[in-house]
Length: 121
Image 1 (cartoon, rainbow, N blue to C red):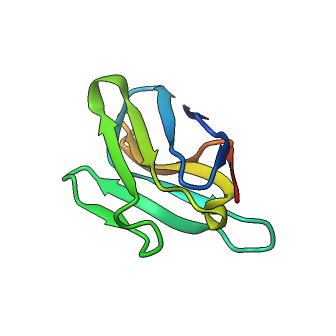
Image 2: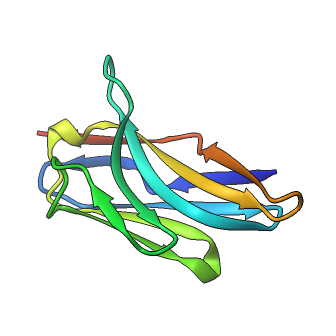
């Protein structure tokens, strides 16, 4: 079993910055890809940014130039640096991981519990 624990959310004024972290722990695994999603009230969950094992990065058009995804492989931790935040960035942010668990070599998709980001105008 693998657990994803997010941290770093909070309340910030428009134009401010936050950094989200997602720490993966548990049984031995191989990372195929990880990403950040968000879900605002009344809206569908959407991809914010993702990074593959080969470091191919994808951003939603709405966050390009403002958000940066990165990871620390030694710490099994994913980050999302969010700058120039806007009220429309307000949402619950979820960490997602596409992993292969070494025991049995089965591929699974995991979600974190979510962290609230609120941007005031």
